[in-house]
Image 1 (cartoon, one colour):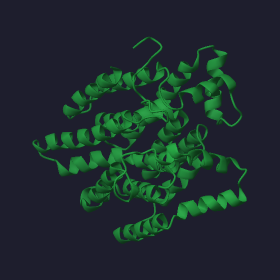
Image 2 (tube, helix red, strand yellow):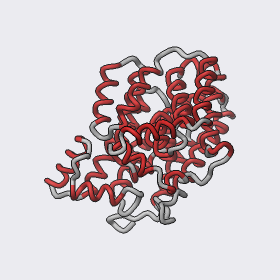
Image 3 (tube, one colour):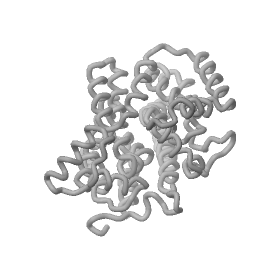
Image 4 (cartoon, rainbow, N blue to C red):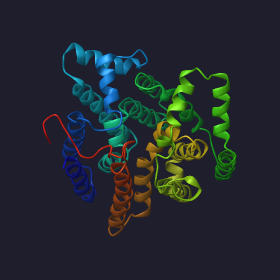
Length: 352
């Protein structure tokens, strides 16, 4: 199965503990190839077919142009998938290089955590998320010209970029550890008092006919509200608590806190967004999940600082693989509204 081939290829190279440009080329080409030849995979597959053949007016300019070019060349929708995945994977590698982290581990974590959602399902969102991740790295390096440029490119593929963009600048503000506690308590207050549902009621009252309310109504169906069947205490999934643990470890590890303060702030706002928006899963999926992408940087940094010895590198390997594999299993076992798996079985235009 292609998924197993990609997973074990990444696993073997991860165990070697060093960057290998030939592996990077091989692995990234595999990620692009299998995403571009897929058929009938992902909840939004039929929606992207309709976009390709019907070209509705509300499609963002970048994705519209990509479809128009493919139609003009008579290349089919899989050509759109190909170019989209090339853009996404190129940006992921670019972000890894600019963040001065281990590219091999970074790509492996991306495969486990975000690859399927971004390349097989919410494609426009995935393209925008990849540009936003590059923008985050550019903002960290105070290269604001490139940050803005990548945000513009991201907006051409999905409007969620506008909602995420302010947090790139807010996260540059100095936040001490006590402020983390204050903001968390306020977000919990909002959560337990159904603050977000109150906001939805206001939107429904004054903007009931708007596209915003249409989207909210759509994602308030029982399927989307009960989307995560693995919920544990207080209505949050286990993965959320794992992310909190990662955040706390980064804060209490001096070298990580010093070197990755900006990424930690981004990660913190992702956690806060999950708490505040938890009543409507799609806002977590569309908004907070983009900010969560810095966890690839933080986990590698954290493991490098905690496991410096030769013997410790095996613990580093186990930590990264366990974290990535947990979320990969969660992704591959997601079911659609009718009970079918989103990404299984793998089908392609060449019969793989």
